[in-house]
Length: 484
Image 1: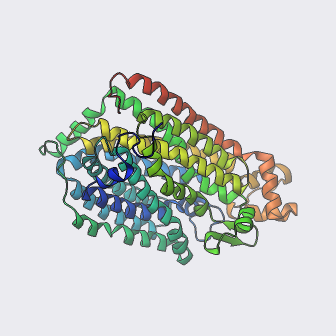
Image 2: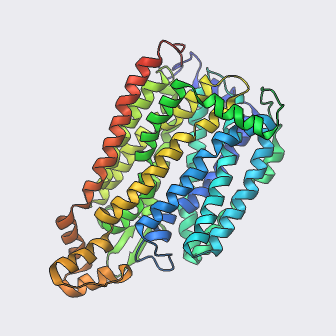
Image 3: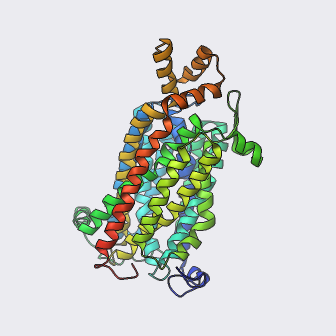
């Protein structure tokens, strides 16, 4: 494909690295702080919201969790369609500052509200702040990059994002050891550090026409979206994001319910700070540390992988990446083995590195001058559609096919005539009724109800998106330069 000294552009990795300006590095650090706070919440919130046996959790249903994530996704990923145009109009740093204030309010609401609707409002407030934050940061990135260094630049961005994501789980593990509200207070404090970062660089010019009232900006935003190639691209990538987000929305509950990582703990001598110990299952790797293998591998490999594929057309890289990620998702949930779950997460991560950074890079390259923020806003639409619909669908699917407490209730109703059991006591009651150990009861439910089958439909959507991306690549080839 290419050689290591000048893949894709004829320039070395080192020279591309040092060609990037101060604003590029400053917004990368800001994104790292923001992601540290964000993933400090995201890696544990599926457990906090819906895990039946989570001490101090909200104990909502999986369907409730799906509804929360649906509305969260819509706020977070569709708002940038509007806020991106406003970032171009009013300046990137101003929109970033406003977003930080809103995010802090969101975290504080989530820390203090435990009823469904007030907590949902907190989630949506956080989502709104995140939505306003993204276009300003990503448009600054686009302004600082060229076609020659964009692949390495976006790879670097993705690496630093995942450094934040990697540090999120240990932060969350420490904070919810204090209390669940401490998770949200701590993340509010971390995101506030970005106020200081705004003082470290000069806002790059947006390049567009800095005129127009808010209604005119909104009209321009809507009008520019109605481009056939852009709409088709958004539709295809929505399928990818529908599949992709299940690693973070559904797999945490699946790991806690089904995956036995005790052999991993014994064989690799996993340190105590990565473990969850209880009297029923023994020592297990916490779900946040298993999933953290995703961010860990990306930190190590994403810049070099993006360097190697920088000569490849971006749409072809996305096709390969979506295909690999779909395989990894099934592998992560195919058995109860901790080893195979970890392997699936790592396979998924390779696919993610080949696809997700390339989506932003592709839109950044094809965006007209003066519309970088606008197009970076559009980049969030596929995630909003895919994550929103996927979360709503996954909530129904997991309630029916995967939630161990629900399956235990169903088993006792079907086989023992016992009804009216609360989800929080379902597994303890099943152990009492059957005389089995907790692990034996889990294995019995796995064999009886095949919860691993829930992954097939999500992987099928991913594969369909990959095939459509291949068709899209052939279609747009005649419209785009060979280095796009």
